[in-house]
Image (tube, rainbow, N blue to C red; front, top):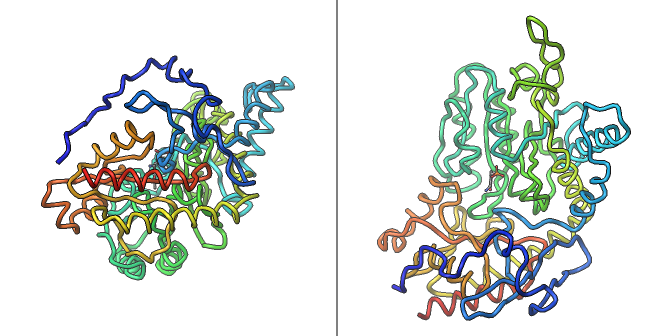
Length: 440
Ligand code: PMP
């Protein structure tokens, strides 16, 4: 077993010097390569230090945690800044421009998710906030059904929920949801499910699950945090009642997220936050705003975050074909490269052939995941994530099935995730690094 690192051994720079690196992009090898003709990210190949004193172009393979900013997003925010002003509060010209941009962004997002005209689009901070808002709004006594494979953001917010074990196949997911919903008490019912796993990248059968929900008089809420950076979603065509996602995973790292879907529960619930904006009139008693959006967006909203998010939605909507095709080729390269390394085992719920987005988790024999991640960073300039990815029950399930992992006492994994700025060189560098690590 190699020496344990547990913490970075490279000196951690002050915030100021970390953001003004000693080596400018122009001096770094490989500098700021823009890939293909589609959307482009800022900071692809930014130079990062490695242990031998060199700087190498960063191989960012951690998109699933937070994706870099799209150039189109940066441009939209820069264009909006001179007009930056209050939203829904000012009579001045710039307030009107900013308010219009905020409400236009709502329409852009509605169309991005395929929401129907009267659906609510509530801006939140992120997916966690969106799911907590929905949990706040579900009528008392609602029976909630979730799979234990969910990210904690979708697993934990519910007052009470029936937790279904990890299904062995997508078909079993559908039949287990059917049984659980049918067995739920009479009253409102909600099925909560992820569209694409943040651990394995596998796509869940959300259309079939939506049908099962409808047959059982239930609603379906979809955690789309890991789907929308990779694939389009159409709530109306798929029959989804709610979707939630985060701007920072969608190339818009300015702190906005979305809960979109049916307005009635949201309109009937008390405000998520109480304060200005959520109230229609305040005297001895308070009358809350009738619209779902106003009711749950109290306080000054994050207008730049929302403008950024809408710009990302537009840029991706114009480029799905090229984004998805490029990514598919890269995931194939990564997975076949990993499969060729005898000491690396990919984690999967539904097997090799299950359709998935560009997220792959794995363990390396004889190595603890933290050490793999830190060594990849410090020696190769590669960024990946290690841990249980805020999906503890799911990762334990996947590793529990892996006897070797269990017997060596490991309970965490390494995750490589890709996106628009990823190139073949990043994938190949990871595969070479893992082969070298395995040989130590
Ligand atoms: N759901 C999934 C599937 C995720 O991957 C994440 C982020 N890892 C979340 C929810 C939570 O997102 P956020 O941290 O932006 O709230």
